Length: 257
Image (tube, rainbow, N blue to C red; front, top):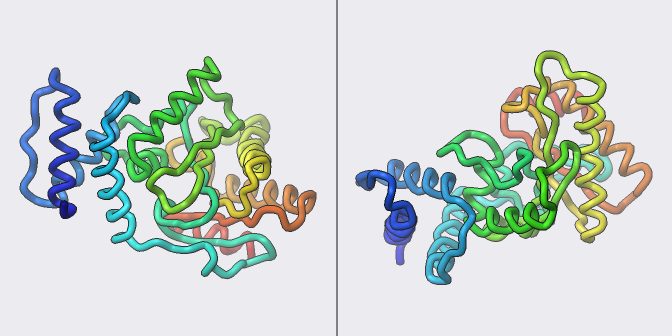
């Protein structure tokens, strides 16, 4: 199969799962097909899937990521000892683990084609990620607490693991509790990474964007927490601060010197 054939196959199979919806017409153009496929991935509830579907899906997603261009952490230069700054799409970064800014349900973003990092990570990891997260939540029996973290395989992403953490949702100026909880997100991820022998971890800008934590204050907390952990645990984990927006790059560049 070529990519177009894989894409049409996946769309057709996902539409079969939802017979109660009015069947949309499959667009003829590539961009329209990709939007429809991503939307179907996003709204799909965690449920078993056939081996054939996974084979086609995995081939499709790995080729999509490859075509975007994979960045290998090993080729990056540190801005400080054990600390890196990289601007780009976190779903294309090859390192031991990336961090997902999740919500308390921990099942990913269900809003079709939403711009959040949770949506992107679940889309390009594949349907296996939502299934893995559902299993963790069933075992836990309640929603994830803010400031804690969980770990799953990364499936089709070029990294090995995804660490999922729930940051504080801010209304107005962040409170002292908000600041403590955000620091706990970084600390929990680092501790979980160490327990799983992870040597490199990429943090997104947790709680900014949809959760409204002010970008510069969030970056200050992120850097301070990581530096403190690394001082206490020298040489154990290298940290990449991943940013996507230019404004976040400038903030981290200034704070990291």
